Amino acid sequence: MYRTADGREIFVIDAHTHLWDASPENQRGKLGKGWIDCFYAYHKNLSPPDKVWTLEHYERYSVEDMARDLFVEGYVDMCILQSTNLFEFYHTGFNPIERNAQLKEAFPERVILNGSFDPRHGEDGPLGLNALRQAKQQYGIQGVKLYTAEWHNGSRGWKLNTPEAYRFFEECEKLGITNIHIHKGPTIWPLDRDSFDVADVDYAATDFPGLTFIIEHCGLPRLEDFCWIATQETNVWGGLAVALPFIHSRPRYFAEVMANLLYWLGPDKLTFASDYALWTPGWLVEKFMAFELPEDLEAEFGVKLTMETKEKILGLNAARLYGIDVAAKKEQLRNMPVVLDGAAPATV
Image (cartoon, rainbow, N blue to C red; front, top):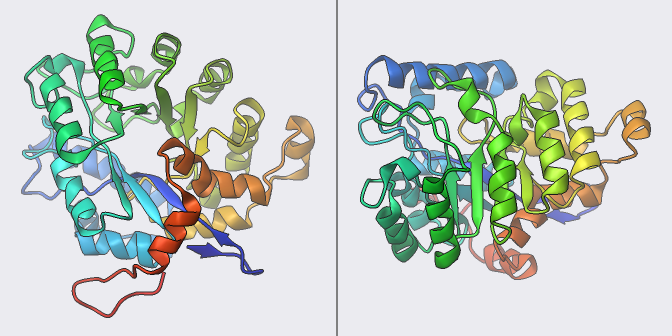
């Protein structure tokens, strides 16, 4: 838990994390290698120098590594694990739900586990309707992460506003899977940029008002398109993964992104995310808590990044989305220290 200088406790939910395996043994040739190399370039270029990992560690890290980086050193009280499968790039997938579940099993009170689907898989495929039902039954998932640019059997992407996709949204409504996280942001080699376009969000959000669509990466670099959609669709939120690390490398750009998001969406539909292990949350939380919008942007957009707004973004908004009683959870976790590999309990 992050504590301010005056002792205020800030409840932190890292709303976009992964437990991935991109090791050479799991890579399916140049596609798997190219993917993680592209990820690693984002990591190196946007992280402070002392937060850059070796490529070997970045390719595959342990449950204990992740727990330490989030719950011990990263101020994170809870995290949301988002599945990204990439079965055509990795033999056992990049971070499918079965791998992510390892952290959930180790720290059940600190981890929210989400699943995924792909409408091209139909009824019985590994990401088909039956797999979605199984994930709900086995893990009790409340949300899914969708990757509309993923490759599958010669197809290099899919749209949210197709009859096939709507079958899955209808099933999500029936199952009570109401939080739909969607990657709509920068491309990663070898995926196609156009498959991350945000236009199809508008259709799905209108047609499924009972679902909440959390647009991860806020559509970057299509921020303006995203903001126009999110301001008219009350069930469209923004996830700050990828936007946040610019707080270090390009603070003015980050300020402009935040000013736009606060102007168009307001403070109640934005979630903090490190995109772990792209970046570690500790330095992001510290820099975000210290960050102030430049006066000219405050005047132009009529917004402020207040302590109340920061507290909402860091955890309260995601808590509301996932039905978490923050006061009760604080007390529960206060009496539940993090234990790493049999070591003495860590203070968090």
